[in-house]
Image 1 (cartoon, rainbow, N blue to C red):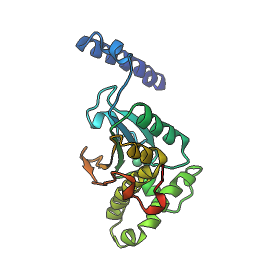
Image 2 (cartoon, rainbow, N blue to C red):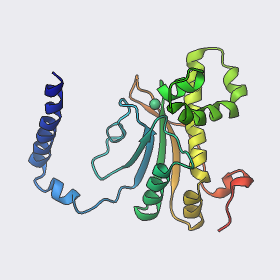
Image 3 (cartoon, rainbow, N blue to C red):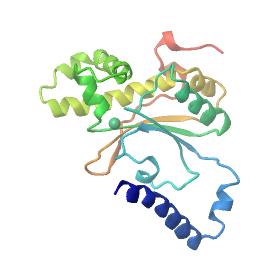
Image 4 (cartoon, protein in one colour):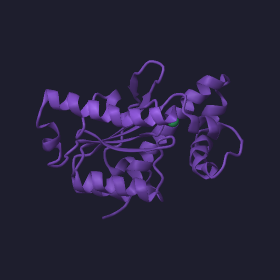
Length: 212
Ligand code: CO
């Protein structure tokens, strides 16, 4: 059974290649020439939130980074490398941080259960709870509090993105770079723009503003 599942993955790949080639016989040879995506996507690793698919993006149109609960953590070399490459080499014009309702990482951060090494990743989400404790603790209904926490986490991650030397440097150099926060509803398929607006480092708390 498992072997059949595994084999189906290769079969699906072959069928996908054939479908693409039937529409455009040059499809893969054109893609092989390089990429110039206008967008960096930072999303959750959740299997129900497929970055390309939900915005109708084709291969070559979006540079993707995903981790548990779409976090922007300043010591994460993986995130920093993706961000640096996207901004300074690919020159993306937009970055979207996309969270989602029903996120397991957010739910775990609301509880106290020890899970494993992931506890230390979740700590960063707990920090977001602490920053917004007054607002969140005032929401009596668990599901509503859970939803709002997912939204606030996105907003904080956009802020964390804006704080990075990479983004501040791009703004300082007058490079076009817009950063956005979205929340995705798995139950409806719809995204909502949370309208988080950071345009230059004057929007940051003074302590974060870098002089170049
Ligand atoms: Co998630």
